[in-house]
Length: 186
Image 1 (cartoon, rainbow, N blue to C red):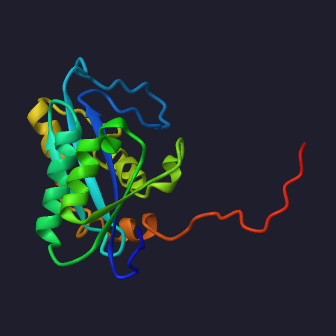
Image 2 (spheres, rainbow, N blue to C red):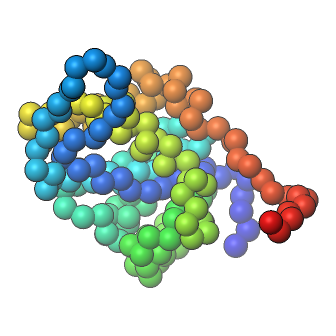
């Protein structure tokens, strides 16, 4: 399949935020204890990050991310960008690579581009998930699961406004390429 250079590029992946303590590092003279819940509830976010505008489109649930969730995200993206050809960069998660998702993408005219195995550093949305965990979960305690969900959703909704400066530095074209390099065996 030929790639259209004018197409929208999205980096897709899911993050499973567990209702529990996200530890951080803090130097202090007194010991600091952070209360934490049992960690049995999850706030799942399947996201698609637009490479150019850095806008994040999400599908959220508290059960599981599966092929139907990915199909829902594909439909949402197609509804938002109906006339624009799209390429979605995804990892090799089973629920993203299955026949149902590939058929839905083909029906919608969306190209799926799968990354090599074990290469999360090539998926730019991983940088967003790391930022969200550090920004709204690191060293913080939420009294209820609803407050926990609201904290994550607020952070995600502010990525293109309040956190725009951080997103501009995180989502860049800085990749190390190994073209024409000489490697020596050690």
